[in-house]
Length: 377
Image (cartoon, rainbow, N blue to C red; front, side, top):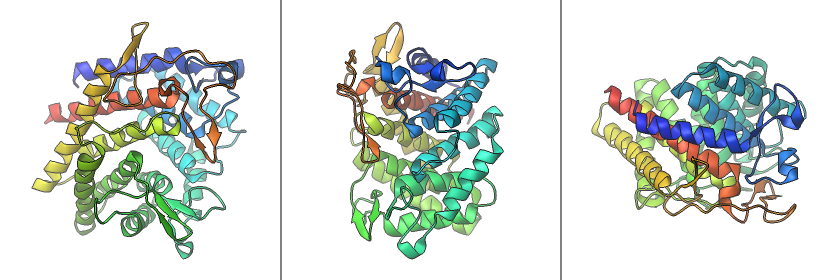
């Protein structure tokens, strides 16, 4: 493992732990991420609940345990899992399939990597995705319950989870085939956001590319030769498209704060998966792995160089190719990230949002992973 990136990942973890980790409602044995720093009273009391941000916090803690196993972190992972359910009205599920997919992915990795097991939660969440499959309505699975918006942010992570968990590989393949048939831009080869009531929603977000890369890579690694070639070819095509359109300067494009703060980190996570996991010995396989690795490392170097340092720990920018801005105290109800129309918008200074800092941490762990694999060869 490259010690430079391991140290940077550890510093990123320490920054989030110091500024954001807090007991839920003061209860012993609990912990969640305060959604902003500096925080308002409402933030500190967890009056604000962003389900999928907390799922990514759990996933980052699992990344750190993979990098540097520690009993104390195992305890933090356990507390995070317990507290997520408690704050979510003592349930694992909510109305958003993309949210549930992110938690399912984090819980599956917590079980496999950290030994923190919630079998009933995994079964409950898997059933949600299997039961939501509605090809007769044009899907895919929808973004949220009772909705006709079928999108990559729900089908991508749900498909990755189903590929990894239990005996649901066939459904994961169907989800990947649906995305490839329905949401790929014939000109750029990027992934469109989704379809709503039969009409294409043509927005192209970085994290849509990331989750499809993750799904196709998992399938390439888990299927027989004939099927594997189809999925690997999609990875080759999409990695090249991301390099050309989403990282034209070599650094992944930012998407601001709020929910957008997580987009780059998610993309980096699954580019790292391509670099470390895509099977095959062909020239195209090697180019895809190398391109994915190069984008991750260029983005990580740029994000680190453009960080601020507060009390000796990094504070990452929402855009990795420009200087991070120091967030300031806000009054209650002012300049805060707000939940509007099913999504969280940005604080006035995006660096205030936990999502942005998790993305930077995720990127450092991704850099650590791709350098560890390249050193092992």
